[in-house]
Length: 142
Image (cartoon, rainbow, N blue to C red; front, side, top):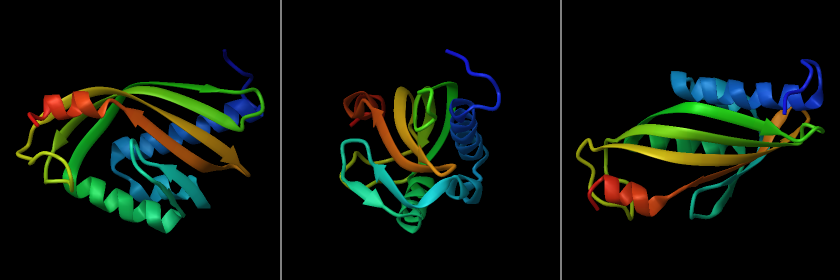
């Protein structure tokens, strides 16, 4: 479904598109600026973390352990612009050991993924990421 340019849905999709464009550029400050102060972050098969500064620490760990680019991004929104869904393909490289996961030695992987967002007051209020961890472990040789 497409929406006229100046609707809540179109604005929400543009916000999430900006977030992902910043991700692909490695522009963490712009990513963080898209988030509300109290953003809820549901890590794939992990716990919920809360707050922009906690999200910043997550990005630091991710940048140490992984180099990723998202391709084939498709975004969908409800008409109210309060919920956005994303589907994409992650093209990545496992750079450094991440706690509880197999050893890293530069393995490459390609993995479909998805995310769900809540949008409030023009900022992302929740990010919930999903991908197949078993497939990722198989690809990196774990």
